[in-house]
Length: 394
Image 1 (cartoon, rainbow, N blue to C red):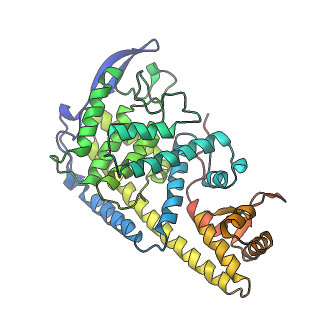
Image 2: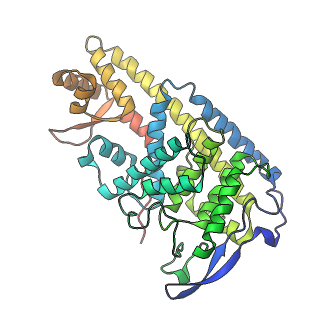
Image 3: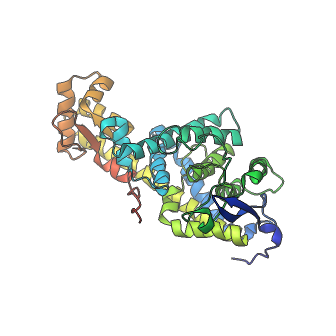
């Protein structure tokens, strides 16, 4: 990668402020775009790979027989991964079982956090039809994200009015201290301006990467910054038409490479190393888009193969195919819900589930005799790839 001459204008400034008895140096980033400008030529190769992968992913939405189902599940996978980075231990299975049978969700607090993230994400995507990507929209999403659960006491939907810090046990030994409250409005105003400016002539994909770092650096909320910051990438790309459907989510890549991710964020702050960050970010976009494309095609293949196996069963295939159709919409089902949704009798549904279990398509997951829950094994296996919780530390 070509070397970039870094001037002082690429670097932020520090403001001394007292926090909880410690005198700390809070960091105030310079407004975007970076100056000197980003050397786009130095990241042209990863940019090209990322754009091609995004184009292929965007195109699959026209090929999927029911793209809304893939989106429904993919949003939930991202919610789980993004929340895991923040410390929850919930899996995708926990969330989907909670949505099917709330009593089965465990641990309840973690699942509620993830469920709130799904709600915030879908709310933000729907609001883009009526409201531009803005500080107002960010606050509204944050209010949905933390409306219940562990963050409910940290002023949901309100930019902070006290100092926060990242890492360390107290402000004095923190890894990083974001801008003080006195600088917050100016930093956020400049960020919102950059979201909509065109003078820099930077591609939307490059701008999305810059916006993510700037938001994480400003850290405008007392809690939930990481989740909102990751979601901003997809929202920005949808807002600018790079993606027609919100299918790009970076949390699996960032979870897998979290040490490098945090290091590069810090290098932008300390050394203005935007090109190194963009190289990493664009590689993540390409890898994530390719994973989503491959998952979508494999899911379509599983659905098709299973329908052919069911159809070959003969006389009772019709009811099993109706159950299979609903399993595509929700990979966990109960007999009582299937009766309500299909209008078929309980004996017919139980017989269909028994046939699907014999074929190895579904598996009973509770071990209970009553209120049993059945999961679509192959579909869940693809969806759940990479969603094991991060190991607990300390």
